[in-house]
Image (cartoon, rainbow, N blue to C red; front, top):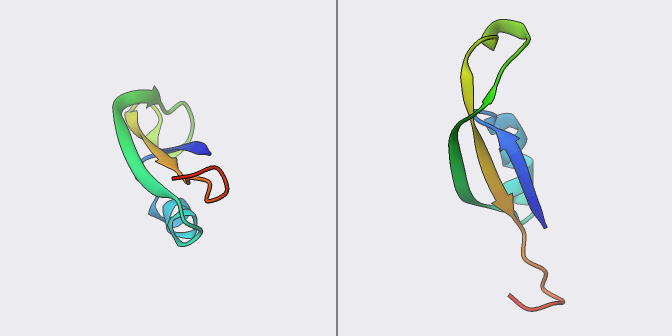
Length: 57
């Protein structure tokens, strides 16, 4: 399973890591923020995955 989250979002990453997900990559300046305090800034995205124990490693 592969998930993507906008960085920095450590609040979101912690529960995923405790559920067995791990960070496998980062895409820099890929997602522009449109709302809120970060409007107009480009954000990194973090790729995280969890491998299936049933289907191998």
